[in-house]
Length: 466
Image 1 (cartoon, rainbow, N blue to C red):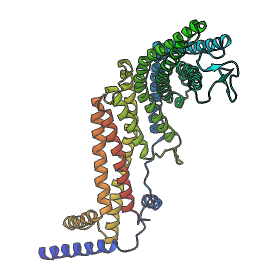
Image 2: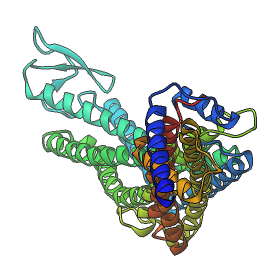
Image 3: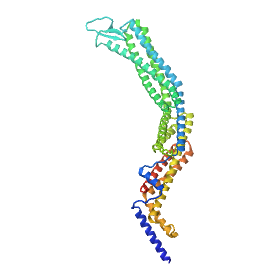
Image 4: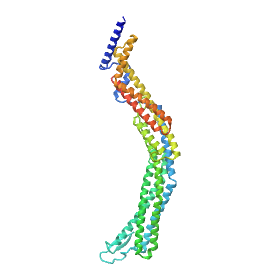
């Protein structure tokens, strides 16, 4: 009797294994409506986690708080930089413009006294046939020889003075740009124009670099004017000596002022480096928020986000952490660093909320896919719940073996497990606080990505069901 039962059990197992094998090749059987939902999603060919409205709203609000806080810090730094250094630059460039105007007016006065400007080889009268007629600072002059030294001296003097005036004017404009930058970012904050705030560090960087180039050229031009004046004075009229001294004094002032503004420019650019980190973080998070705000929602009010959202957030947080620690060379001031660290934690918390939802939802979907495939194998093989315990155990072993041979299902299980591991790893790092938030965000990013992989594999596993 026992042998008959054992023989019957083995036969039933063989039949069940054969049925399972055949079921994998036969057309799918009709299952419950839940399976139909899974199959419909599989037909779309893409897996996406529906994020409930309350989760999406909470994460979005945390990111907005980050943006507002970083914007305030950026504005504060811009206002701070508009104090001593910028005031020095404004004053110095105003004086440079004044020196340029002084040279220009003095040259006009010299021309009124002597239209030859005391330059040897230039005369008021036509002294020979074929003399060259020209103008110098608006005064008509005649060069005794077209190829003579006087023509070159006159040309150099006029062009260098014109260049000095132009450089002084350009320096004044750049300083005015720096002075108005703080007012502009303050207005941008009031209008919640975060892109305008983010661009402020770029304005500072460009204006300071341009001013540095102007200062260097102004020093060269001043030296050149001095050399020409000394050359002219050596063989010139004593009537112009006082005026030429005024030109020399103005040129000397320009050179001194150009050298004076350089340290302020270096200081401003260093501050701009730290401010630039805030600007980049601000811009990156504004883009992240834009992605969330433009996300589609379903009929239940749930939202769907791309994995690129986490990539962008990782870039923002990791880069900003380097600025807080000074790793990238643009260390934030201590008071700003403390505030920024607190703001970073909001982004990490926001992405944790999204990662938790993704992992929990996907784990349930993978478990559901396993249940559906198990039910399919059981139904296809005509599994009998009323069979003896031993027969059912042997049958379950066969079903389990079939499930393990389903590569898509196993891939879903592995990815879901890795997603849960990454989520827990991220939580552990988040608890450690400052210095670990970038690493925590990477774990949350990986949790989301692996959950996506798990969901895709689960869809493939049940893709043939209807």
